[in-house]
Figure 1 (cartoon, one colour):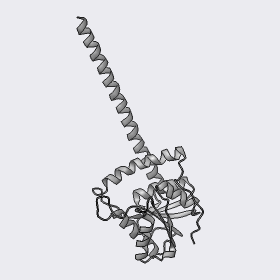
Figure 2 (tube, rainbow, N blue to C red):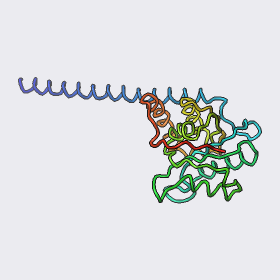
Figure 3 (tube, helix red, strand yellow):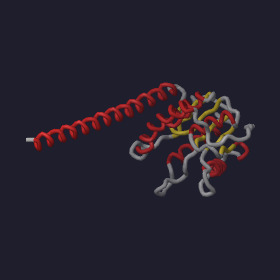
Figure 4 (tube, rainbow, N blue to C red):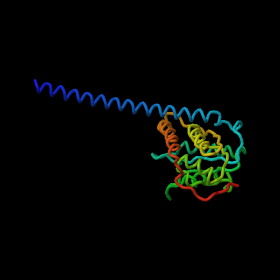
Length: 227
């Protein structure tokens, strides 16, 4: 009888532990899902009406900021995000919607240099070299927006990337005193860009974490005037 009671007690404790674990898991998953939905909604709402798909409708600004990405995919082959952003920047310049292009990207090592690679391809596409300025410390979108304001002294700009990225960049720009609009480069199909789209939801949550923590760019630097 005592053995039966002991076994029943142990089973009851085990059941309580499992129930507790399930409850904690449900609460954590709920918090994550709510955070993803709310952060995404805030950024979408703020950026509404601030991004443009057409050269005819996008307002003219002095500076276009193209946000860097790798030219090639990790598994090999060209990166469509890179190609479409480059095409968008060239189109804006040719249409005289921007006068200068600020290339902001990662220059983390001698083997990886987004800004220089993008500049070379812009020049090859017909954009004069003296119309292109490089930000080698745009390691993150946050860094790119803060440095555009503080290092390059911009008060307004047209951000050049895919729409989902432009929306987040516009929100970060606003929070750091930069009045920005976005020119949407051609997007990649959901099938091809599924991982990027999922990652974007978490990146939007990170926006609010960074703002709460008052996160600063990895590097600051001397002021550079674009003219």
